[in-house]
Length: 329
Image (cartoon, rainbow, N blue to C red; front, side, top):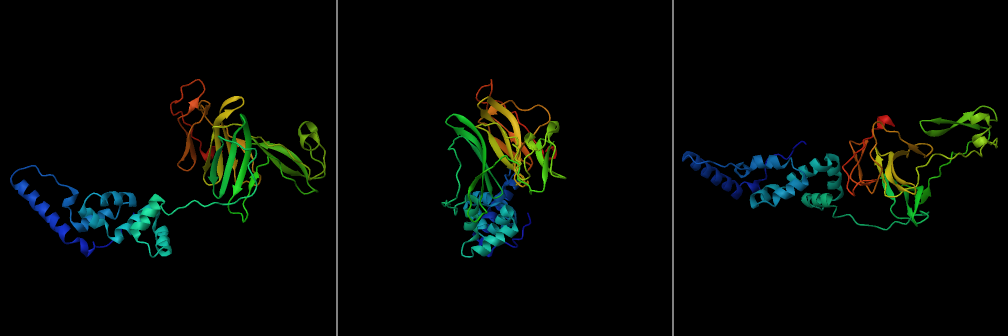
């Protein structure tokens, strides 16, 4: 990070500088007598110390400030804290916070940003509902949307998906319906399966031909606009993980359902015209089926699953991880 602190403040150039000179004289005396000399950071000049601490983040600056009186006076300069904030959240964010809270000192502002001291819970009323009631579900935030999948309802594994868009004027929970959308009446439909997704395609004329020569989806010749085809859904489960990737995708892995443990992976594109789960076929050996595991995102595009309870293994199994890249989706 760029350091723009400039010269050290005049207040730090008196007693602390004398201490540095005293330590330097002691070091010189020991060196002259042939004794081993221990040189520490305290021997540096205030100007050099000031330039060094300008490269710290707020947490490191606070730790160094609590070390001794000399460092406390060096780091007490507001320019040090401004540089620490810029190292932590960037220049643009620091300028915005400084402009928004002009009465708050920079060191106090840094403490609030690092410790989240100023944050408070507020109650937000939303419409809709997540039904039936459940426990042991998994959720994540994708942009401004909250996604919930699955869970356990009276020892029954669920496989429904609910979405809450917080950018709406009156946000409400909506259940993700795994149905193909209705198309204009003059358009006939035919289905095609591509990469595990059932896609709606417009066909010329009033009739579409489905699998095995049957008319319309599911073999129904129905009128245009009535088409609705079930899209694939992950089996019901609990104790699974879902994580957001790249601010767009939801990735589901593992869990336990009515038929046992799972080690499958599913993908939901929150920006697609039609929201639908798609099973991802990963390369190489998949991790063993597991439940109550943990997962995290690394490098923005890779999902890593770690320690869990797996089938036929003790409660904690080795971190048999899976890494999934967007290029493979």
